[in-house]
Length: 262
Ligand code: NI
Image (cartoon, rainbow, N blue to C red; front, side, top):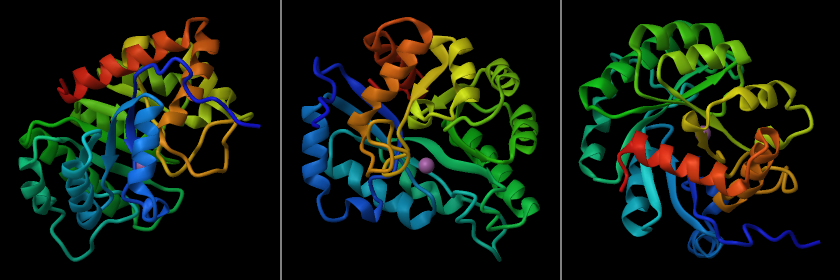
């Protein structure tokens, strides 16, 4: 069965993806052409270390729909350095670099000790203030520490792929931050996230994929690309009792506002 993606070609903006991933190495230009055909107007690729941050900035020069967030992911931290992300500085001169990300805490994979993760996270939050860019925050199984650090730094930005409780979501909103929602909301076991989305004001929602990961139903388990956001928006529309178009438009406007994209 062929699923029709975005039949009315509503404009789709993906606030979080990884098109530098090897999953796209063979056919990136075809995938980009296909996504544009399906209504995708913008994508923010997220760096996870110095190499991938440099790579996505290069990609943003070659593809009009790509923007970049540059940063060091909690699984990709460097040891033996003084927790300084200064090496990202040259990447900020590109006008399509719109955020610092993805940064944060990951106690699920736990690749680095918690204290090292926290030091890198805080250093990058300080850095984002210094360079006046919003942040894209990753939090996996680290809700308490993430919230504590966010309360301390009060950054502008988004908590991406939100996986906390409704209570936590309300705390994050109080800080003025946005909440990133992706394909997980379409999964059968998404009860907690559905509750968060039901209460979430539309002016704080950012749609995302985390492509090539977390494809929404009916593409769950397949390689994810940004046009599949249509199914995530459809599900959110159903939860909130509004139209898919309203969801896509709200997220698009929020992304433009947060990242100062014209
Ligand atoms: Ni990601």
